Image (tube, rainbow, N blue to C red):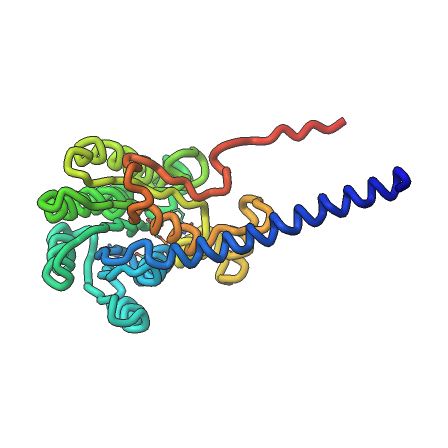
Length: 300
Ligand SMILES: NC(=O)c1ccc[n+]([C@@H]2O[C@H](COP(=O)([O-])OP(=O)(O)OC[C@H]3O[C@@H](n4cnc5c(N)ncnc54)[C@H](O)[C@@H]3O)[C@@H](O)[C@H]2O)c1
């Protein structure tokens, strides 16, 4: 056999081997997707801010993974209709997270209705004042952002662990943000409130380890939910949801993917599940590396 023919033959066997690996990968992908479908089987979860965006996506994925979900929100009509669409494993409760008593009621409702609470997902957050400079920051607005974005999560953790400690088990998840990590990408009140969430998670995780309760947070990159659409409208008068989606998706490049609410929901499913049984005090950043690195663009 000539050297060229031999080389072609070798190349063909390499290509065949690669094709086989690719087929195996596809099989593996199918297999792992199927095996993940019941990752939350038997678990009861309370998700706040579940009438929209990340909370709604999480409610969908939790139920697909076998959980029973109590959706909590201030948008009663929307929340009820989503719970209705999700079927028998979803119910809705009105809950303003800025009011501790309403969080107490929601947690107690999960226990009376479903008999237990395994997962508390403190997800509500508001954009805050949208003040672009420290001089423009009204402190009443700052207090409101801290009340809804931080105080509510303190109350959520407090009341969730009240019913989890007797079982010596549970998973508590909070929604933080990349604004907790990197300055300059959000107004001060929002950024400070989200940084406080990361601190709160570490502090409470340290205490709750002894009870088998894990506390983690998720920090998503920007994605075009109602919170962002409303923010863009107020800040820049942009009233076109498609345009906002395009702008947020272009805010960071990762070939082949954009940040979607479903990506954050997947991270929440993982943290809620027993797959994450040894993970606590962690901030799971869903940002395709946005807060990790900068690149040097050398030009000759
Ligand atoms: N969208 C993003 O780019 C982004 C990025 C990082 C972090 N986050 C965080 O994700 C979380 C979810 O936001 P989203 O983007 O899905 O926004 P969203 O506006 O789509 O959903 C927020 C939900 O919270 C509810 N809510 C607001 N105030 C409430 C209150 N006091 N009590 C109960 N419910 C209340 C709203 O009715 C709404 O259904 C927030 O904590 C937000 O800060 C969002």
